[in-house]
Length: 527
Image 1 (cartoon, helix red, strand yellow):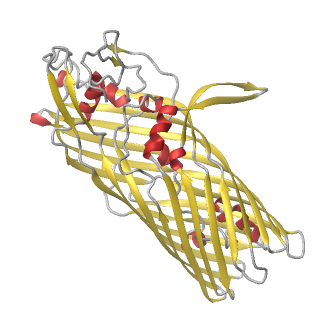
Image 2 (image 1 turned 60 degrees about the horizontal axis):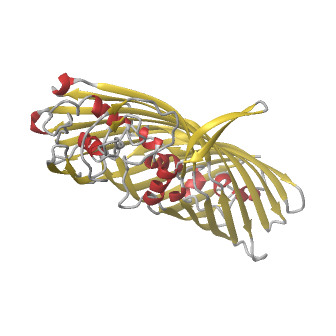
Image 3 (image 1 turned 30 degrees about the vertical axis):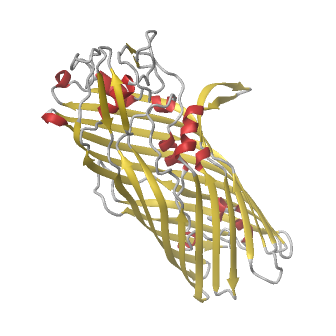
């Protein structure tokens, strides 16, 4: 940030356009490993093996390996390891994870044309995050103060900083502090504003909701040698998050608590295509390739945020703010390669690799709309400032999958699998509240977590009785990350009365974990 002289001028206006912030975008764009119990039990490494309805979303050609029609439904429990329940958020929740069918139609002696539909929960948002640490003089309100002091909100005609409520970098958190804690405490600096140091903080957040994926597929089997598939997907986003951030201000002044409730909802669509082929006619070895377009999301987000002033500053004045806006988000392309084979119908093994560049997430501003005949359309354009930040903060993610299924009996299967998902976040990434973007303007929190790699271990068992199949799977997912309540700043401020002040506002990173256990049951019927 620039080092500038300090004077604050307040202007209240409204901003009609909007986009979304990098860390919230990343939360929407990522996916879990979920589907049928067979698919989970093998770690999702079935993209070349096929013949499981969950491959409809990972390699659509896998549906082409069905020779009989089938219907499946899956449900179970997801439980978070560690932490405490918070604000209605529970560590263990039931989950309806999948339901679908495949209709297989023979078109030749060894060729099929198959149709399929499947619903699955691609993202489960249920998660409780807790963090606490000393601040040693740093504070969230000081961050808002420094943004004004360094000219982030704009410069007036005299070359001095403003506090412009209309600035795209003026967040809802900034609004709450400039309305309550910062103004009119002290005039020794000549500006009428003063920040407060803090000794420590306590943070809790409970997320809930899901992204449901509805996939429609057509696939073909050509002479039992080449398999082709195409899937059209519709995504349904339902996210709710509630957090409480409390700072203990230094000098016995008291506590400040910010509560934030945010909802994100909307829909998106994507197209996925895949091919599987057997390079050697006499061998069961299969090789698969897949590609998925971005998911083109049209979303709405809303929040209600409150600052509870537990001090005597400004007579203990508290404040609240609520906003709602529409935006668009385009996720990255995905590319997959897979390989699999079977051994005498006793053992099946598979492996897969998937790549997606999350640095290419496209945060978009709605710019207006109109009607084409009777259909309303909404136009949009990329948010260049936020997308530059995304490119520096997120990176390409590689997912490796391996799995195996052993059948000691013709109607009994034992499965195991493993996933490694490389980190999405740059280690030095941070939530930048100084970006001139409407994603910043509508942001109502300053915390962020740079999550590291994800490791998933799975196992399962399956049993057939006539046309019925019963499958059970267990998944353990582990991920660690570095949490910070706000971005760091370290600057020298020169005030209008020519005095200078060095201000350090740096907080420690706190290690947090996301460890989950999933138990999934699938009931299937073959016909």
